[in-house]
Image (tube, rainbow, N blue to C red):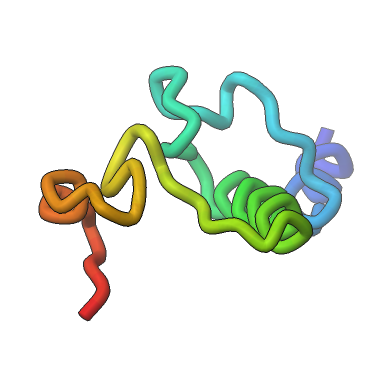
Length: 79
């Protein structure tokens, strides 16, 4: 049993497979662990870098570049 727990704890975020339990209350923007969050960010980075596009979080923050109301509610703002 300890070996399974050790293997899970030592698993890199690069190898981590996200599942439904990793999303807080089913929200795709809120993750329940640091490892899950790093795995999700890695996925998003690869996806948007390939498209040369910007990511807009539809749950929190601005929904597009002109969304001032969404920007006001974001945790982090630019500028």
